[in-house]
Image (cartoon, rainbow, N blue to C red; front, side, top):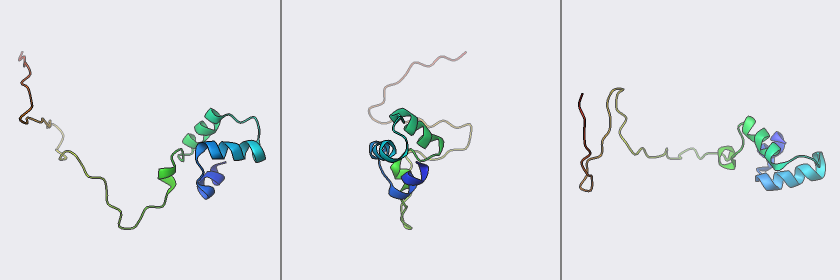
Length: 85
C-alpha cells in the first residue's frame, strides 16, 4: 500500500478502493490512514516533487533570540491590565 501511494499518488479513498479490490477486502479506511501516517505519507502534498526554485514560506514574525517576546502594539491594540509582584 505504501509503494502504491508513492507510485500512483492516489488519494486515500481511491487507494482504499484499490486495496479492497486487489489486496485485502477487509481493510478499513481508518486502518489505511493510520498505516500511511505511520510511514509519513499521509498527505499527497508531501509526496509531490518540489520545484528547484520553489519559494520557502514567508515568515510572519522576526526570529528573536530566546528570552525575547514579540508583542504587536498596533493602532487597534487595547491595553491589558498588568500586575507586577
